[in-house]
Amino acid sequence: MLVTAMAAKKKNQTANTSPRIANRKARYDYHILEKLEVGIMLVGCEVKSIRNSQVSLAEGFVRVEPATMELFLYNVDIAPYAHAAATTAPDRQRPRKLLAHKRQVANLLGMTTTKGTTIVPLAIYFVRGKAKLEIGVVQGKKTHDKRQTIKDRHAKREIQRGMTRKVV
Image: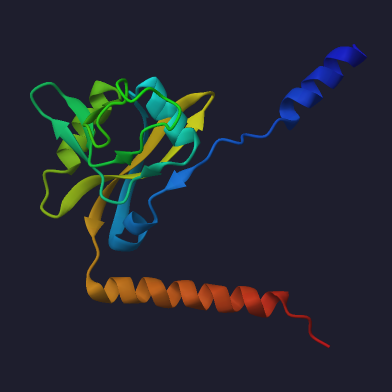
C-alpha cells in the first residue's frame, strides 16, 4: 500500500515542461468573444519545432470551409526542425487542418458571418502529448480601446508595485 501511494505522489509531481506559445498581439488587437480548444494535424518534425518554441502565431487566422465543414489554420509559421532531413520538411506556412466537432464548426461559421468578426489562434500547447490550439472568435478593437487596454495594464502594474512595497 505504501508503494502505490508513493508512486501516485511521484506521478502527480511531474511538471508539464512543454511550452505554451501565446499570441499576445491578438489579445491586444481584438476583443475575444469566445474561445475553443481544437486539435491540430501536424507532421512529426513540426511537433518537435513547436516543442522547441519555434512557431509564430502573430499573423495566423482560421477559416471555416462551409462546403466540407472543416477548419483550416493559415499563415502560422512553424520553423523547420533543425535535426530533420531537409527533404522531409513541409512548407513553413502551409494550411493545417484543425480537428473539431461538426457542431462546433457550425457554431463558429454562424458566429463569423457578422461583419468584423474572425477567428484567430490565441495559443498553442500540449495536452497529454498532443498539440492543441486555442482559437478565439474575435472582433477588432478601435484605437481608443487599445489605449484603454494600455492604461488598464499600466494601472494594474502600479497597483502590484504598491502592494509589494513595505510600509514602515
